[in-house]
Structures are given as structure tokens and as C-alpha cells.
Amino acid sequence: MSDVLSSYPLLLRGAWVTIQLTLYGSALALVMAFVFGLIATARSAWLRALGRIYVEFFRGTATLVLMYWFFYALPLVGARFAPMFAAVLALGLNVGAYGAEVVRGAVKAVPKAQYEATVALNMRPGQRLRRVLLPQAIALMLPPFGNLLIELMKGSAVVSLISIADLMLRAQQLRQSTGQTTAVFLVILVMYFVIAQVLQLFVRYLERRADIMLGRRPGRSARSPLDTRLGAAK
Amino acid sequence: MATTDSAADAVLPEDGAAGTDGIRFDGVVKRFGDNVVLRELDFSVAAGERVTLIGPSGSGKTTILRLLMTLEKVDDGVIWVDGRSLSHMRRGDRLVPADEKYLRRVRSDIGMVFQQFNLFPNMSVLRNVTEAPVHVLGLSKDEAVERARELLELVGLSDKADAHPGALSGGQQQRVAIARALAMRPKILLQDEVTSALDPELVAGVLDVLRDIANETDITMLCVTHEMGFARDVSNRVLMFDQGQIVEEGTPEKIFSEPENQRTQDFLHAVLDQH
Ligand SMILES: Nc1ncnc2c1ncn2[C@@H]1O[C@H](COP(=O)(O)OP(=O)(O)O)[C@@H](O)[C@H]1O
Ligand SMILES: [Mg+2]
Image (cartoon, rainbow over all chains, first blue to last red; front, side, top):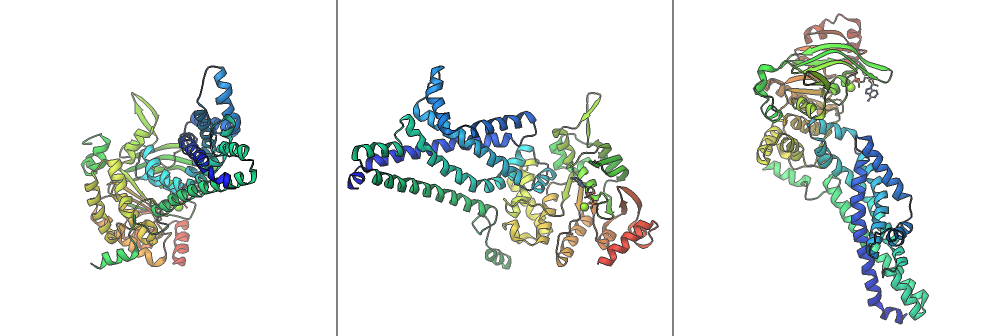
């Protein structure tokens, strides 16, 4: 066990790569989720079809296979990607497809009456979305987005198969050099768990912010009943 | 019309007075599937007039208001608002289906208060009232806030400006919704059973606000309501609906005191029994 623990710089470097993959991958996934999720709610049937194609294609392909395509297959036809780039692309496109479904579902789940109020106030279609529908929809997206974020982080372990030195690959190397399989896997189990908890805390924080925005818990955005009463007494 | 520019129109509704001729339904047909809700409906509301729609549930009253708010489309016939059709616009010398840009110009004259208030939960009370004036009418933030505070005072909620809509009672929410609609300076205010969702003790407060607005402005009002006392106080004319058609119309005195049509009599008895 001490062999394993004394190699912690190696594992920390691996963890850092895993974190970077998670950040870049989820940033790409977020962009894809919003672009294709919103397209799927568009009035134009062509746009909606485009949204469906993206979702069905990238949801139906394993991240690993996608990554092999970017790393091994596409270079054969002349498109060469750095391993990290191929990995981020595969993770982001795959998780983005699930995210697009989340975005579409959340926008559809905002009560129709809210849309009707925006029409009655003569808002432009873009304003309806940006000022009323999306802020309410994002509150609905956060819990499923939290799950996807953690899925992406855990799923990033497949990048070790194209020799990216993430936490998983470092663990394999350490296992070979020390022979301490149990200890190594116990340590990385804990490390993956800790990263997941930090991500979860971040999402919880966002959920709390959204609750305050929607008035579901007291916060700075709306004054507390006591303040209002004091204000009224003046 | 003094101007045809939509932004100027919306900010200065009073200026268009010469061209205003209110609302006109011309052979309007509305179907939902096989259900014919409005059959060749004709009626008009003059500018500045206050008209109340009464009639049994399912007779198409809400549908009329939703058609006017462009939340639904007619299947046949034409609805005219201030001389403009809600379904078609002129392109060259042809009539083509109205596009969003045209509809936004027509809508700028019309406001609506909904049965369920429909305030935006992601904004404070004040921002509910300033959001559209700032982003749709192009008012400066300061102007919009000043106007919103005046309107909140008018509806008796000055102290709730920073509150969250969810923290208000139904009656207070509905009064905010009225302020929000008025902030857009509509020429026409549509009201769909605005007190039906309220606890009985909150109804009077909302109706008082609407009475004030009726007394102090010359906004055209088309109200669907079961509050017969309110209808008697504010309206110039009452239209009794049944099965998608007007079965009787007249002054509130005539309709409420000596209705001629059997269905009007039955309906009024039923409503009065409930209260
Ligand atoms: N969106 C809709 N889809 C299908 N049917 C509808 C819809 N809106 C209204 N209807 C039908 O139209 C008729 C009139 O409804 P409505 O205008 O709400 O009546 P009222 O407001 O007088 O109670 C009812 O039979 C109702 O079921
Ligand atoms: Mg109704």
C-alpha cells in the first residue's frame, strides 16, 4: 500500500487529466445539448429533423467506438486528431446527445401558459425563449445534467485505451510496476468518487441558485417577508 | 393613423385615436377537430367600449379572447382590430397569411389578463412589470421602473415590488398581472374570468382595481366574467353566448333585469343560484 501511496504524484497527474477531459467534454456536450435540443423545439420541420438525427446517431454509438473512429479510422482518410482532441470530441458528442434530449424535454415542460403570457406581452420569439422559457427550463435541466456530468467523468476512463494518461491509465501503469492490484484500484476508486462528489456539489449549488431565482427558497433575489413588512411599515 | 411605425404605435397609443375602430368579428368560424366552437360569429366592439361576455361553460368565450390575442387562428372569417386583419396581411395587392412581424404590430394594441395570472416565476414582481416595456417597447430601464411603480401603486402593491410572485396571494398575483398588461399601454384589454381562480375574499380587491381602470382610462375592454355586479358596473353592453353564437345582447340593465331569451334567463338563474 505504501508503494502505491508514495506514487501519488503520478495518480494526481492522472486525476488532473481526467478532470480536464471532464471539463472540456462537458463544455462541448453543453454546447451540443443546447444547439440540438433547441433545434428540436423549432417550428421548422427541417430543423427538428436535424436535431433528431444528431440525437439518434450519437446516442446510438458507443463513446469508445466513436473515439476509435476519431483516433484510428479518420486518420486513414486524412483527418488526424490529437488523442486528447479525439477523446473530448467523442465524449462531448455522445453526452451532448443525451443532453439535447434533456434540453428539449425541459423546454417542452415549461407550462404553455408561460409561453402565452410572452405572446400577450408581444415579446419576440427569441425574447420568449431567453427571458422566460429558458430560465425556467434550465432549473428543470440541472438535476439530469448533474447525472450526465458524472456519467461523462466516469465514462472518460475509456480514453486510457488510446493511451491518454488519465487516472485509469496511471492506475494500470502503477499496478504493473508495483503488482498491488487491490491497493491501486482501491485508491482510484476513492479518487473517482471524490471527483464525482465535487461535481455533485457544484451542481447542487447551481440548483440552489435556480431555486432562489424561482422563489422556491428565500434568497437575496427576493426580499424576505420580514423585510417587506418592515418596508411597508415605514 | 398618425403613424404606422409599430414601436411608436405601442408607446403612444393615444395618438392613433383618429384611426381606431375597435374590434370586429366577421363571419368567424373556429373548430377544434369536429367540434365547431364558433359558427359564423359576427360582433363588434367600438373603441373605448366595455363589453362583457357571459354564457355557459364551453360556449366559446375563452376562444374568442384567445383568437384576439393571436393565441389561436380562425378557420374562416376575419377578425379586424383597428382596421387590420388578424389572419392576413397585404403584400403588394395580394392578401397573404399574416407573418410574425405583422402579428407583432397588431398585438401591440392588445393586452390580456389570464384566469391563472401567468406571472413569470423567474422574475421579481417589479421585473414582471418592466420586462416587456424595456425589451419590447424599448423604454429605458428608469422609465420602465418608474412606470411600473406607478402601476403597482394603482393596483395597491407598491410594497411588493421586490417580492417574488410565488410569495403573493392569488389576488395580489392577479393585480400584478393587470399592472403588467397595462405597462404595455394596450388600447384593448382582454380579461378572461380574472377572478375565477381566486378565493372569494380576494375577488373584490381585483374587481375594484379593474373598476378604477375602467373609470380612469378609455381602454377598450372585453371581459369574460361571472361577476354580474361587476359586469353591471363597468360594461356598456353585455353579450350572451351559447353554442358559439350570440343569443342575446343589450345593456346590462336589459340583460340582467329583463332578459328575453330563454337561455339567457336559465343561465342567469344558474349563476345567481351559485352566488
Ligand atoms: N385547445 C383546444 N383544443 C380542443 N378543444 C378546445 C380547445 N380549446 C377549447 N376547446 C373547446 O372549445 C369549446 C369552447 O371552449 P372555451 O372557449 O374555453 O369556452 P368557455 O370559455 O366559454 O368556457 C369547448 O368545447 C372546449 O372543449
Ligand atoms: Mg373560459
